[in-house]
Length: 365
Image 1 (tube, rainbow, N blue to C red):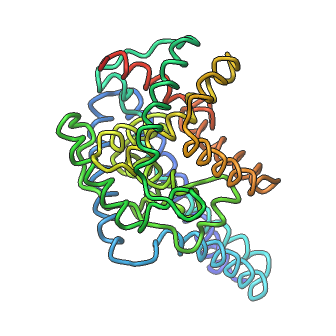
Image 2: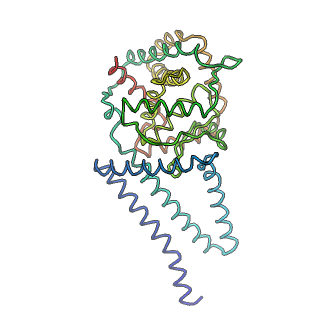
Image 3: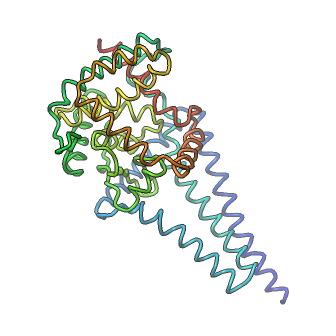
């Protein structure tokens, strides 16, 4: 090997390393600025929402979620490139390919932080809505459980059901359109939810896989797509659509997305959305109440109508159907991701929407 060849080889290795370092340095700088300067955070968040919104609308023309295709094809492509490098050029080519893949990962991290990660630096949603969140008591939890149970009992007879008595809400596209309409109405009251985002897509390839890892949907900032699994109980679909749409609107924390989903659905004029909001709120509040006062939980559960109790039975059967090590692993990964975004409660943060519900009910009376 000549001196020129050795120099060329060194440059080939240095370029992806330098690019990776620069990308990570810029990413960290942007993250620090967003965390420490409110004005910088606001501008970065607005820019990120503009980019993901444009991407979401562009990819909405594709019937199959582009994110699902990428999640399947990119790992396969990475393995193919590594094997090709190993068999054609040996260990040195494998190392160079690994460096290029590292650079690509750094670019993806950069885009994630700039387009979506900065949304986690936003002021708390409670502050934006003028809500005062306090530590809840058993009596407050019971009040929320009773309020949501009463709403369930009111709308349980009105929602469409199948021959077995379980919820059957009809076409996904219709539900998604209703959720987007509900957000448009909610925006008149709370402008913070205003955003020109594409309607969440139904999962076409990974719905069952998501169930096995304990996930019902996700927001994919690299394509701006919100994806919802249809392999779920029907009572949860509208709420999950609203939850993922909240992410697309620039809301990061899971509890805040749950609360946004509740507000959007419960203030709709469609019984399916209202029932879905009440059902999900009841589950979170009842679980919290059961942890501190099981006797009060039992009192409130016995107040549910037979149709609502049957829907809870269907939900429990669905959840237990996918119990296993794969689900444990998936939930562990999701828990780690949520904690990494500044939510120390991890998966438990989903249930913190109950605190927002209590504050909201205190405000509206």
